Length: 131
Image (cartoon, rainbow, N blue to C red; front, top):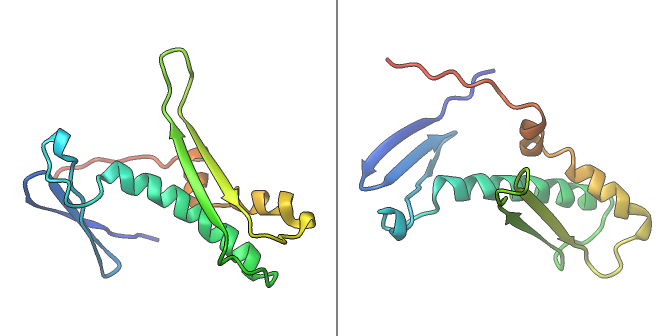
C-alpha cells in the first residue's frame, strides 16, 4: 500500500504538506529563521506520537462505555544529555474519576499498540531518490 504525501515550499522557512486531502502547514520558529506561523515539523512528529496514544486510550474507554470527557494525556520529551543513552517520551494519562481499577493496566497495554510507537520498534527503511 502506497500513501503519497506531497511537500511544497511556499516561501521563507515554510514547508507544507498535502496528504489525503488535508493541507498541513509547517514553519520554523523565529529563533531558527522562520516566522513561527505554524508548528515545526518536529512538533508535528511529537503531536503524532501523543495523539496516536490518545486515540488508543479513547478507543479503549469508549469500547467499555467509559466517559473520557474529564481525562487527558500529557507527553513530556526529556531530551538526552551526553551521559544518557537516549531521549525519553513520557506519556502521562490522567484518567477520569471513577475509572475502573481493573482496566488500569489494560489501558497502558492499549497505548503500547499505537502505530506511531510501533515505527520506533520496527523503523522503516528510507529511500531517497532524485527525479
